[in-house]
Length: 383
Image (cartoon, rainbow, N blue to C red; front, side, top):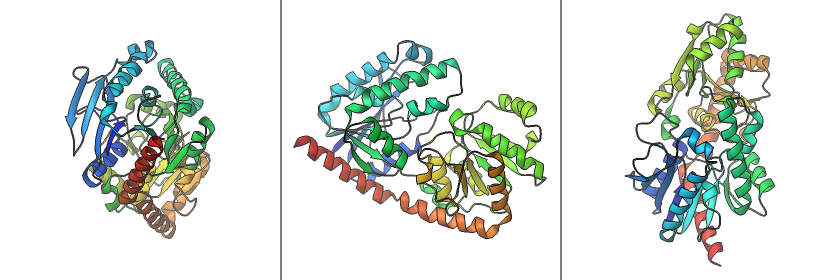
């Protein structure tokens, strides 16, 4: 079976999101399932219209698209047209197209192809924009992507969903969808971590992404700084450090900046080290589906405190495998102190969340569901 994937994929040597949920899935399937997978991804960094690399048993083609403002100014029409033309030119070589996500335009180029398509749900631009805080350019970006998301989604029938939230989103925006429940593959490294219950380090991985809740994380840390227990906040992900420090100076005056570590984007082994030195992970997101940072923290046995929004309730059994919170700063601070002071509770949540995540993200099960879904979709398409 030959499958064409359309998905985000990191460009070599570039400081961007590493898309581990894609690379882990592609690597495992290519090496263990007998599938032939080729990946097409959009990148303004490609050398030439297309640039191809061979990975662990599969090929990745970077399709060059316009940068930034020009891409936006053309309403993404060049990007969508270029991707559509390329997919049409190679579709005869494949049995199925697998689109990863609807917020990155890939599905917009796959309407009425001459082969079946399945979409893996990730996030939603049209839902995220409801919580938007950012520049005018970012707002335009989200609005335009929301338009394409909603315009083309009803054309598709087959979906991989993971949570109750994304399942309901698909059902609300399509007619009689065929939904396969399947989780994402995580990096094995996180299953071998022993977090430090005696540490005072609190991990937050959202950087300055407005959806991930940095302002709430700082508010919680500001409240905890009043306790005199010398907690430390570790922030990973892309962020403007100077801007955050100015924000702390003007708004969060209880925080000692020396108690915050800014790590930026870090590789797997460094994240393993950071998790092993932390005693809890906070994810006060405004909206999320099934954030890998939450899932990886659970796999590591690092207790998670997260917002009760989107698909996150499908990941956490409140009080048993983590805490689901409503955004109240005092409640976050109280739960963190409870974990810090109650070793029995910390151990219980660490053990239960690790056990649940190991079952949920079992690579053999995910691979089996993936292949069975592919075969069922191809069968129905050919009937």
